[in-house]
Length: 305
Image (cartoon, rainbow, N blue to C red; front, side, top):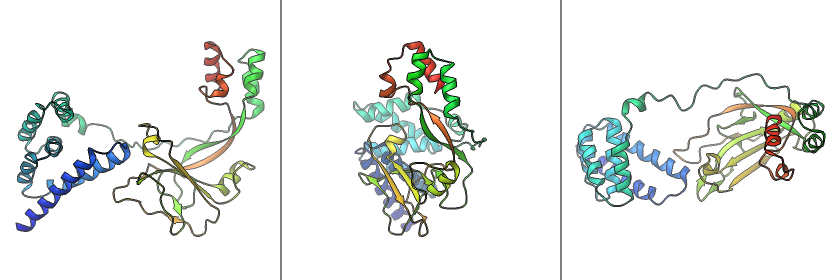
């Protein structure tokens, strides 16, 4: 019993420390990771025989943010729900940010049944046949058949050769081109970070596979290209402009990377195939803006693209 009491005290201290840190974090990716880590600590309390006493202690913690975190956890897990909602009601009387959060939770909380019925966040991927790509000749014919002659000439001048990326099942080879998952890296490689937060691994391109698929292109004919981006950029939270690219010309020593943190969750993964095509710039790009397209012309341009 003394051992369990010591474990509970340690878990409560860790939860309090994480809750305090969460209040100081602006980076959404780090916030989510710390939130998940705290949820795991709550889950360890859930499994203890004296969990009710532990949560009752948390409800009376000196930091009201800890009280709120424990109360909302207990509500979702259906643990002493009446006491948990009483804590929320008590905190809802506060005239500060935490009080607003408590009032919002109290007044708008979703039922546990609705959360349980929510669809999985990562549906099974449905792989389809790779496109054939579009030739420059076919693209110009399409443009000429859609726009007036002068506009067609201007838009055709924006055509650029491109390499299309297409999802496919993940290959067993760690050097295979893919999106997400974990990268293949050399010994001693250091994971890129932004303010000590690991960047998300976006994907890797095997240059030899790329050359075999599309032939001549500006990239090297061998080696592995790795791409990373800051969580808050990748997920559309807040722009940071932070990214990283690594190139390893010698692939013989590359091995799957280890996770940079204990609670690091890689992006969902799929293989990558390639095809040659032509593309037009995004309709919001500066080069398109300089054409000063009328509203109807811009709609046609978007359809063409």
